[in-house]
Image 1 (cartoon, helix red, strand yellow):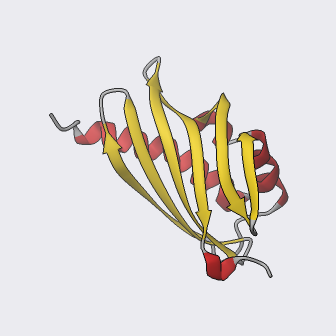
Image 2: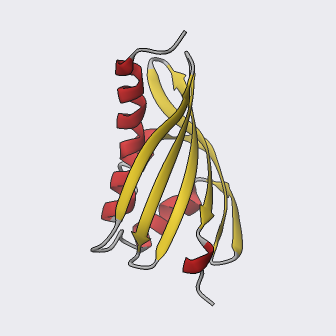
Length: 127
């Protein structure tokens, strides 16, 4: 059975904390979404980042979204307590495009991200 639209909207609203942090260069919004145990995997300028979500916080706090930053949130899958969200980012730091996948669990009635994996578009990798 498909979830009600209000649940999709709740997942999108939770993911918006991620987008707002990236856009503003301020991790405090994302900290509402991610658990302390959230894991991170992806390549930034060809270098593997993996482990704690703290690395994401450091990246976001050191580089603002930029004047041309844009993002789109897509709720790819939604079950009773599980959601998969894709976030398309363009122009982070006026240079990088990403595709992020966020794995969310509904915990105590609130959507929380437990894993983040991302791809940096190859044409935005610093040589």
